[in-house]
Length: 166
Image 1 (cartoon, rainbow, N blue to C red):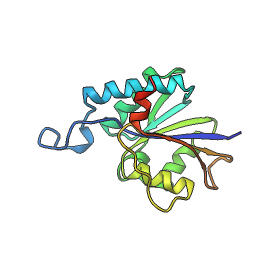
Image 2: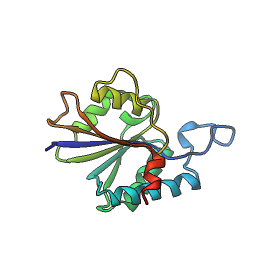
Image 3: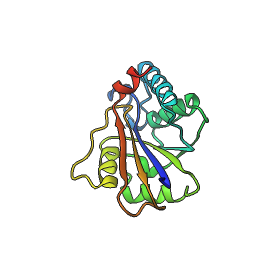
């Protein structure tokens, strides 16, 4: 049995970059993005997927993604934020953040591309990044904490699969 189930999630559909949002960090989720995440949370519930903790990037769209998931997932996981998951964050900083929560068995990380895809690849030993569409979720299991060896990719669900499983 895994000591840590780590879930990597890319934020939902956000407002486009442009004059309305000169500060990229403040771009919010769209109504369509929020509705899609609600459907995804419902699908995760039906699959028996739950989190003990959700750690999100501090940017608006990732915080909103974490909040929508936490509100609609069974178990109502706690949400916290970490600069390690912001676009300027590093995989080493993410691992340090995970290590702070060693008593949690199921941790979800909500971040951005290309970081989240690069992190997933590094955690499983893949040579090239894994492409995360907005709202995609993957699970990587680790046998030791903090994660030292490579994790095992258990599954990867693109958002359209999650939304079809209602």
